[in-house]
Image (cartoon, rainbow, N blue to C red; front, side, top):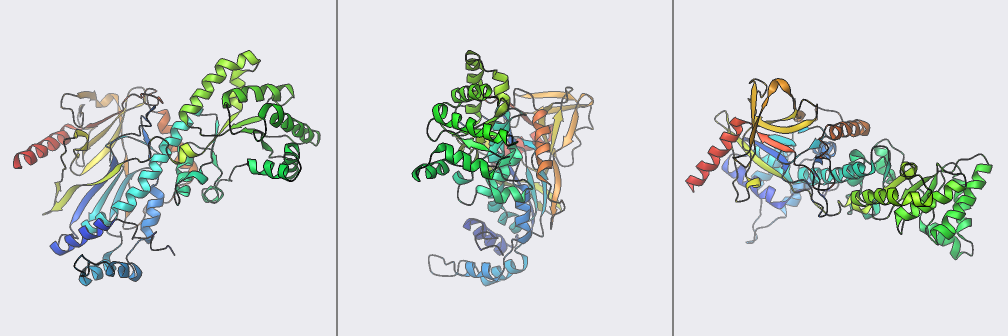
Length: 511
């Protein structure tokens, strides 16, 4: 049974105070439509993301299945007092929460988990009684913002490493407390092959990956033995899984020579050593020199695992340096690149350089007199002006088969019905383009995932990974760039553009 901190009280106080206001006004059960989206792709300072990767949906739906106001939760709310010492929440409101304080009145439409996503596009649309939809906000943002952030970072690391490289998530020790499992899950969706996280790996159908730490070699030396003894002991226990960490003493004078000696002993016994790991120093240079020694000793296929503050930019720089320097040491640069494995920790699970996604949860329509009345928020920052109304999201593919734009329309629009589709920039009236619908393909992005309960089954990790892989392949190469990526277009239909501008104008004139 989840603790109080993990259930429906995973929320902000203002959600509850607003809920009671809605209750007092009698609008608490009025249908409302909220949307979750984010405004900007992550910007890591020296480099920027050209897209996002949606993750966290399945954990959210699993949480929704059990989150509800029971007696323990209601007692917590009874303990809340106003500044005057009066109960913050009335007993009638609490009784109503006890009967209706779950999410069985909501319908959720969402982009499929693992898909490439872009700013301003509704990733989840939440429709149902106003209070239930309002109470979902904090938990939804908590779960979707974080996993989407980490999956995006992982995807960029995969992009830098290349499709054939092996990437390990090794960040559990550096993840924020309580977020380690979510970070592992997102990293595996976004591009990591395996993780050192034993429990979450098992949960997702994988075996955890790992070797040994410096502490093992240090312990042997403290007991009067040496690095070679530590390596031999590890190889004795794991003869077919021997990866040796070679930088505790001296990589080229001690670590790699001792590893080679143990590898030769393993080979004499009929075993094939896996490789070595480098965790400090100039990783590109040490990879070259280690490969030189391993090749000379007859181990040209031994993997070289690199760790130590790696991210997409560092991996890119390592590749560049290897291709420049390897030939002068007689090492085949391409062959060396193919044997590298990247163990990525801190910078992936913390999304180094961009610690939060900034996704938002906004009401865009309220149902009144049988009709959806669009809602809008204006701002001096143009990108913060909401796209109002009950909408659909579509992905437009060009004649190359590549994703060309995401298009938002009103829910009753069929963008394929007209021979020409006009696409409007969400905030710049001077930017628009027209496309012939016969020359492109439009794909709806959202599907129903919740109607009072889950209507889709949890999908295996491999399905999410494959979905992500295919979506990335369908991006223009410019959007995939690690630095200064091309801007992917998110556009509005003419009807939605007109509605937005009319509402902004009316609101400004009214004030």
